[in-house]
Image (cartoon, rainbow, N blue to C red; front, side, top):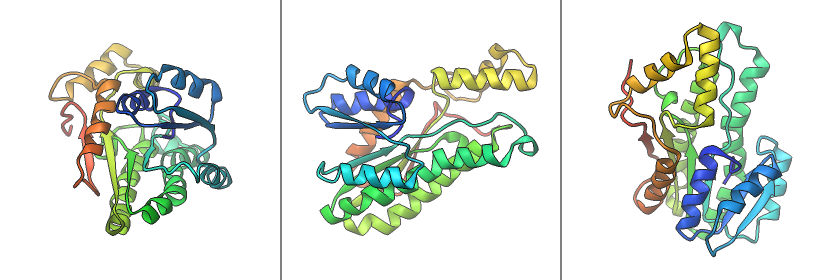
Length: 245
């Protein structure tokens, strides 16, 4: 699992651990990965690997290092929120950074770890997208564009590898309560002059359930997707019922 050091990555790691999986936690910061590992209490074990999954050489080295692990599940969760600005205010370097983290990392990880799954005749890839890739989110064009790209990558890869027994799906959470959304609310409040409380209330009002999703619910959704053996090329919406504006 990439992006395993905090937030959704940590929640999904705990869900997989509770289901009896042996976890390989991948991220850039050893300290946060160690914190996640310390929260796991399953008997299958865990391993921490520090790597920049936007770097082809680092991912190739990771693939070689883990070649004996027999990885059957790949969860691509690495990603960043990016700038909160109007498109014309975004610098090319900012745009490229978002796509490197949110899309290039998935391409590189699949390139390294899907071939062994094909050879084994089975495997699951879950790419974490976002409901924001499927609806407008003002001042967040790099993020929304990258998350739609994740869905396109998922559907095409599923078509390419399905005959080999490998399933590829994406999970698109909505507004998940936690530090990332709190950061986004603060940035949007700063850029618009609207109070944080009003920003959050407006987001929640867009959902059918009138609430945000919890990190634990994302972990449960991941396990549910892995249990659906005929699910492939799908994008699962976990958004508390977000409706179009």
